[in-house]
Image 1 (tube, rainbow, N blue to C red):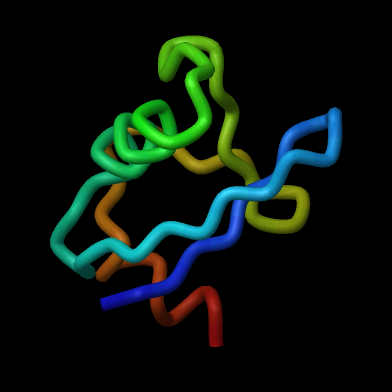
Image 2: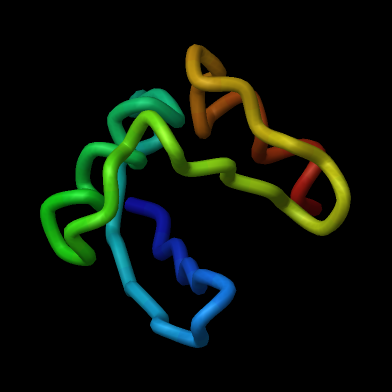
Length: 65
């Protein structure tokens, strides 16, 4: 399980837990259930890098440290 903290431009923060085999698209849908924003309009970034919808969290682990 990985904990992900997301925030939007208005300052609303969302804390999510997801598995390493979940895709970024799955995470977007989980955030949609909590925050109410449309998942198609979300852009997830890690620092300056935009995360693609079909990437797995397990493949992102070496980049995260």
